[in-house]
Image: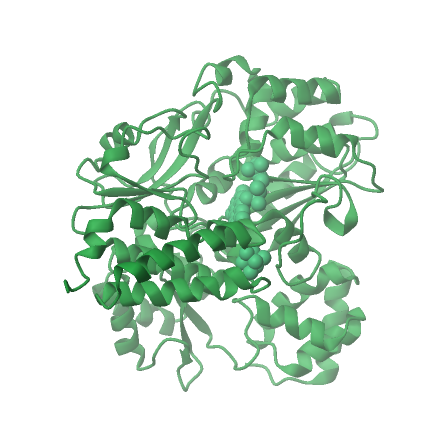
Length: 566
Ligand SMILES: Cc1cc2nc3c(=O)[nH]c(=O)nc-3n(C[C@H](O)[C@H](O)[C@H](O)COP(=O)(O)O)c2cc1C
Ligand code: SF4
């Protein structure tokens, strides 16, 4: 590990400024590179970076301490082993894997071996929910890490295996395809077609299709593009939200790899439709292994005149895309927190309004869309909207790509039309004897057997794509506990209902689990959950009690069964 020398750091920072720019938005990429080189971010690095970018050192420290992938206190090991602790990996047996890792390395979690070779940490969802327990070692992902595999993985690390070539992506595990995943046209076709149309024609096709955002909230895509197109700003931006962090969601990881061409088409079409000249792919740090692959795809398109100036000979249409890495913060999936992060700040959600379509990246009109939304939009422009309108329901057109994990025979990726009942979905994936299904991730809804006739659709049970199945023997309070721990860890801490309310809720769940809680206390906890839903500032806090409340509603008898009878 290199010795830290002030002069050398300054030379390094100057080089990085040339690469990433000298303004505040270069802060995260610069810190990421410096951490990669020096193993951590001690005060001297934070101070020199602050000085070089003209930011107060306290601000830089505030940023570095916000993101879980930055390390300021202690040099991390050459290999940082991160074990996923979220629900699907928990169901798949992560606790035994954790014990085996500790035994093998002789350290506890959050510790580094004395030879500085290994650091052991927990992390939240790695997007490998169908193949858990999952472990990330630096930028390499391991699936199905049962205890018997631990010792070989550690031995491979000691042999320096990370220096060798490694696969660019993990298995996509696609179980069912539909019109989005089946290739009927080639990427680039949609973009070529779009450039022969006017901006309003493109937005018209998207409007006619009824496409709603695939990131979870289901906001109409055409309205977003129309508003950004009409907004006034010196420069406009298109941002791809590739921060997929919702527990149980891994479809964006698959799409990034399998449908890169359509994604880049979709972003470029959006840029053309709204008049944007700069794009960002905000890629979560857990998917670092996809970065090189995406960079190669971008380079190829540059050579084909699909990026840069006068794209496909369209005079005056200039658009470039830059990949920016997240640094381990689920809240940065929220679009305004994402923009804060792109600008070089802590990922703290903003008040809305103003909305990003008016006041987004550096105060300019910005559209933020999910990966699946861009891909679907590209296919709609390429093939027309009829095929899309025919699928799904009146209010939820098209198909949805679902990430299925938990207790079922065939976990993986499924493309299914909106409007499918939970019951049919369970039959498809081999999960018929489920006692409950969590739809929409930790922030979604826990659906019990009596509600399995409900449909997956924005007007019924909406989802960004996560489906987690719980078999008959699962303890639903343990599920609620796991979700609450996730939210407490991922809360940005800006507002009290989310920061303190969720901790109180977790305390209550722990008492309930031990049977030390009265019925009156359970009712108080319900009220607390409802208050958090109402009073929290952003979608994270507002949805954090959802799972607990639906579990209390649907499994009241199971919960009350633990409370001793008076
Ligand atoms: C806490 C939180 C996390 C989110 N994470 C993501 C995410 O990982 N990916 C995503 O596309 N949208 C995520 N969203 C929704 C975004 O804020 C935004 O609505 C979405 O990117 C818009 O794209 P769409 O209209 O194409 O769905 C998240 C929202 C919240 C509140
Ligand atoms: S609700 Fe939670 S994540 Fe959202 S702003 Fe408040 S503290 Fe931050």
